[in-house]
Image (cartoon, rainbow, N blue to C red; front, side, top):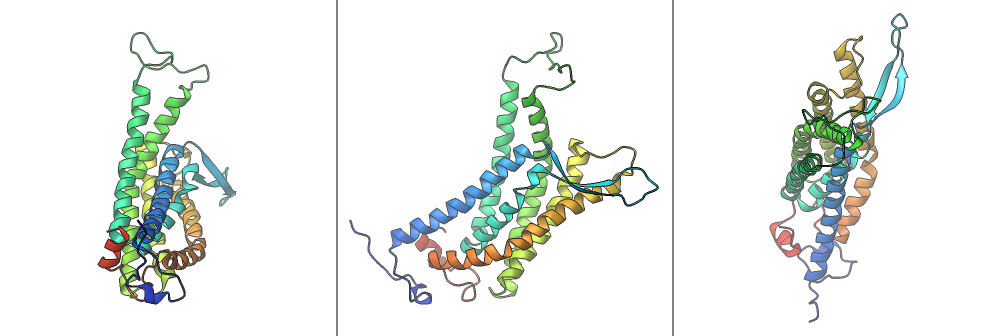
Length: 287
């Protein structure tokens, strides 16, 4: 059976491009969505496992020469791929609308629970680790370390407990602010909703992650001899600046990518329709 070539309702916006059949539109739009959602979910799973297993020292500054020791500016290794998650949700929000972006956020939350279940189940099943015969507790080695799996699991539990709360708050803030600016500017000024939504949401995320990681997981490399809150504020500032820099840097690829994908998927230009019309969503199979 041959595919029937049709002119979608928005084909007039791209007169130089060939007409696509319903099946071609469906494959393109679902394929791009799966790619963006897959990058988002895969990155999320990776960063939650890596999480706070290691902190990267960016630089040190000695603010007070009278006090020994410099202030270290550091980020958790799990932060490195995190900016990509916001770029993916911005693309999904721009191309597929708020409902699909929110759906991916909720699926990411469920993925966190799935990762935690596997980590718990893997440690609960019997293995060959040395245990105390009386209590069944794991025995540390000569260096005072637990088996690698359990150390990674403990750190992952701490990271995910912190990130799950921060993740939901930040991602929903990102989607909400993105569409707030999109509605306010009537689909114009793509750079504003891209950067505005990400900068606000990442401040929420960074603050929540640092505070929960310290007070719940006790995993931040803080020095007991120094005042606590200045150290926490340094961690928050460092993580936020790191994410904000990448958020600003992704403006160009977001602009170019949104423009190219809008044409590739034959979606209405943002200046013509702040939200994808219902007919286009049904036609594409993305409603």
